[in-house]
Length: 94
Image 1 (cartoon, rainbow, N blue to C red):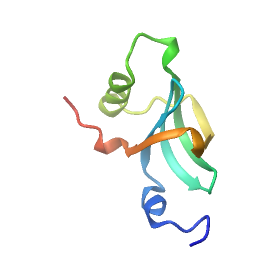
Image 2: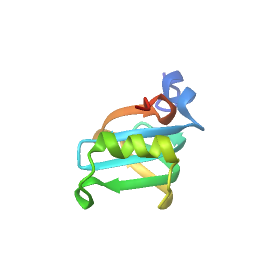
Image 3: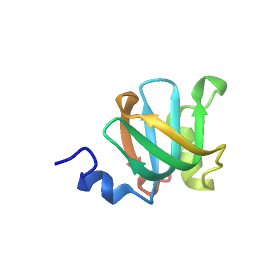
């Protein structure tokens, strides 16, 4: 399997995903491309949790509830810093 041939990533392309990072950052955006070392997101909300009192879980829940408020048109995210990935639609509303 090549670096750009993975059915798991392929099924996420075109959908809004949540990327939990090893740092205090969280990214929510539409996955448009992936490579062995990075993901490319568009319509991205890149959020530094140090800038707010909100927890990661609450922030992601608000993105699910109210939609993504993008602050970047495109972002390249290094895969080595990603600790979790899910579809935004899979975030459970409380």
